[in-house]
Image (cartoon, rainbow over all chains, first blue to last red; front, side, top):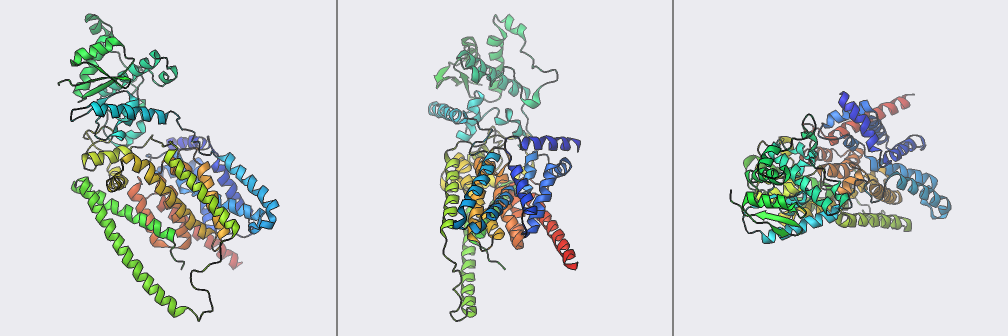
Length: 319
Length: 308
């Protein structure tokens, strides 16, 4: 219960962080209670008020969050309050109070009142501007779709199990549900892990981290520092950070013994092996991938890389 | 008793389709039917329900028109359904409302603010179609499940409904899930708001039109955050939570105010088919109990007032 109370406390702050429609709701409720001589729809008014109070105050919110189960976050308890309907109801009655019966003859009084209410509504929210909106999403999706289309044109085999950077794999299954992946969006969007009991084994997680490291390096090499900031080499998905912080590096001794660095020799051998074990049939590496890594992976898989829409494509190895 | 309006019938029809989709979904889930067979079953059930509905409507029309002939006095009152002409301000407000709705429909189509996080509906629908089965593979990877998924999530029917729509229309899952369904949800939501508006402002077109226009404006301004009604309708409209919050809840409130209990039961059942709830006890059930409690309190208070 303490945890729920803490989430309820923090949830309210987050809920009102980017917009204040809850304030508009409270103003509407105050008007419905104290601004009207005649009490209409008392049941709805009482219910909306009590439920709004429960959603705001942590003890009530904690009870509601327990009822809705931990599958949902704090903001979903507001589903119990018909917010838009009650707010609109209050605004209409307030406007009608200032502009009786909306008579055209009283427009000098009515229009300013309407303008003030309109201003209040606009200031409490945003208009078509979701705060979370990622302006690059459209470009990213378009890029991924074009790479995947190109891939499907050249792909001759029956089974395509693709291992690629996140920005390609993110859209692979939505673009074509026939494409298989060694790991999906739930690797980086951990909220999706609530939908299944399956977990990824360590090798698959290391594959993801290595690929994202290559992507980050490639972006930096191409001068795209802003894009590279999104990728952190060795970044661990939230719930997989081992105690002690950093994931272990592949054994540098083995790399030194084969005459190269851990990154360019050992890693491609290891991760190439992991990919084959996971059933991957096609790998896309970022174009800026170090040539040493690319050559080593070609050697490990005994195939030759070819260019594909800004990526190196490797495929056609035997298990 | 107030008759059902067009908006009531529209939402009832949608809930019936959700119920039929649930039946088809459970057949696929528990009997292992291929998804194609589930789609055919759903299509058949919808057709059958349509035929039954048309027959029911025809019978009601016939008995209703006979009743009207018996009861109508000799030409003194206006014929049933005749209302006064729509005034200029009402026209303006309805036009404003329609303009706002149109802008939202266009926004859904081209706005590209679809919220992908915490959602895998497109992948799930795609996996149903590709594997021709329900939850035979993990939608995230396309590979078979190693352990499985919670049963309470497995029994939710919306992916089957959307997959069936894909088959029926020929559109891909992205188009159906992210564009077509949210637009249907948006229109249904305003049908629900319209029904609620008629309850709050009975026989008053001006205030009803104003209510709808203000609601549409609040939907626009509410797009800012995850979980708000504006966000649900404009960025997340395919989700069960969005359909519940923006269609079922406003309609449920109007049903409770009108004391139309069969519709209340339908809302509670529809939510259980679409959204993870606590053993079927979701928001609709809680709201119904809350409104019932509020109604008892109001009656007790007005009883005391009259007693004085």
